[in-house]
Image (tube, rainbow over all chains, first blue to last red):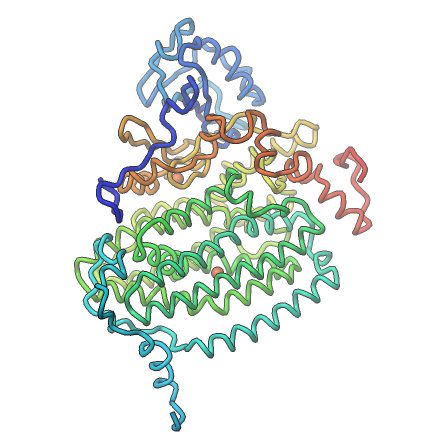
Length: 120
Length: 509
Ligand SMILES: [Fe+2]
Ligand SMILES: [Fe+2]
């Protein structure tokens, strides 16, 4: 829908297109039922980074503080990518895994329900 | 004039009679913003002036108020009034208010000057002019309070600069920028009706009572001085809606859309106020949940029943706010606890007594969802392992708050909404925020999102100290937990309290 504006055919300049991220894509990750991390996270990474970097470096740094982190077994973790079931290939790149600028990854660790099973 | 005029005549002479019909310029050239929003006004003379206040008496009243106010503020400064607050933790509520809300007073001053210039009716022009001057007065009195507290506490030193840059101050800033960059009718619906009339009690009542309860007479003083203008502003808000509604039936769907939008934007903004009430006041006034019940559910409900005669209904998604009243303040405090290393105020975990207050005020949510999280954080902090979220959060494109709000009916699952627009994807915290974007994507695709700007390299660097430097915050002084803060250390010295061994700050003053 067009915005109501004093100039005809007003067009806004999008500030967050992928071209503004210097070769990176920005995407989001949420660890379900662990709301001690108050919100999903934002990461900027090159699209050709292997997915395994996320598993071995990025996410442990981001989420390692949580006592449930030791329950993480990547072979059992359930993922969605942009709300569709997702089966990541760790050796393939983010891009080859279908992760694009502003994608949303959500993961669930079976048997981990947060602090005192409160979803925290 | 030999005869003395009565009030009504005086009012007529000093307002409406000062206007004139233009003869050598067309009205549409003089008032170029009157058409594009689609609001149809047939007769500006039907505008009822809600307050028959003339400019000369306005100056007289306001001057008297100023005189009283500044004598109290002077006395507060001379008597070290800040020493009477309940606890230095309280000052953090003030930091958030004075850096978040005071710049909005200035924005309101500009906004009302702008719309006053655009409305062709003399009655509306005068009302907007007075409010514009009121708002300038409000920001000035608040800057005096900033100036006083700035001498003794951290985080107040550069509020103007911070307002344009700091991630959470983008929430109030973007709210007002959105209103100011809309047309004059939307602006006045947003600010005068949706905010001042429907929601302002939720800002001022709890905040000013909170200040009084916690011994902060400087804030009580500017608060009450501002509040005496507030009844005029609220009446203006109601008059604007009635006037537009009565002028043309085509206006109704446009107004309803604005009410839907600005109610939701105001609700999200007030989450920060709710968080202050529930977590930042050492002596509590009432819970956010109670305030919402009184000021929105009861008062707002009655208002919209009354508005039904114009064909206006309750704002869309109001039901979600009823469910949300049990959750949003705890979630917001969690957000600031996560990221207080990047904030200009301190956070902390409630003590046992405060936890029990929260359990009592939030029997359906606190113990089940939030207490375990908070007790864990508190234990970890006491063990020297205070939690700070090391990664930047995902933000809602509309309200700009980190996406920490949960799905209605499911307090353990984050709410996610998204829209695709011209090749880009945008994310939202709620249906309300998504609708606002979808109605004006050309506007909201331009939002300056703090996290995205950091990742684009526009905020001074990639580390927290780099970004804080760019915000003009002092790393290690303005930020981090209250327990380690210089503010707390100073307070204990002034009050002659011994620092507890376990959480004493490491460095001496
Ligand atoms: Fe104001
Ligand atoms: Fe939002």
